[in-house]
Amino acid sequence: MAKGNVGKKPISQEEYITNKVLTVFSVCLLGVLVLMVLQRLLSYGNTWRTGMIVSKGLLGIGVIGLVIGVILLVREVSGKRSGARRILCGRNLLIASALMVVAMAAILYLGVGPIKVLYAVLPALAVYYLIYHSYAREFFLIAVDAGAALAFMWLVHRALSTTHFVWVAYASLAAVVILAVVQLVVVATLRGKNGKIVYRGKKIDLQFSRNAYTMLTITPILMAVLVAVVLFAPAHILITMGAAAAYLFVTAVYYTVKLM
Image (cartoon, rainbow, N blue to C red; front, side, top):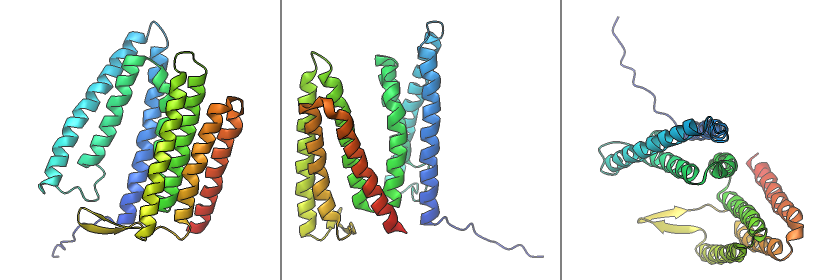
């Protein structure tokens, strides 16, 4: 019997995106588990040294990952290696390694404090990655606006509870206002061009829905107002953060229904 030369069927774009999302969720879950172990090791005197050794080892792995990521990215840009539909490509490895380096450096320098922040950051990154690939582009931007506003609200609240860092609260509000103004200018520009831009000589249609420009105009203004409320009426922080979360939830339901 003659052997049939059957080539390997290339992975489809949908399968590739699904695999990427699952990989990101798996890596973030693994990161949370590693952080739990590190926090336990660094919280006790008899295991603190072991925790520091593990942190330094993970930092070294992150640095090696950065180097390999740069090498792979250079090969991909030069055409010596294809990064199309690859989970392990230069860009992905660079991003993952950079996050590991920053996280471990923060833990080594500040102790267990950054771990509590990373408990929220890693799952948030996974969720945002899912939103980016599954929902309309405008909802991803809305989710970023709401998430950033919630983070700034928390930062304002923490800053107001201190004596020497109250200026951070005002700086946070200024940052939110600047980001809102930038987004409003970009949205107005895109509205005038019907969502079509030119990037690296290629025309890209962002495919915004009919109500996208309205939502992307209202959201940054609303989030800036909510951050200002936390600054000038800190006693109402729970209500304010609840309002931002409710706004995000309602828009999530709206865009989820649109997917059906």
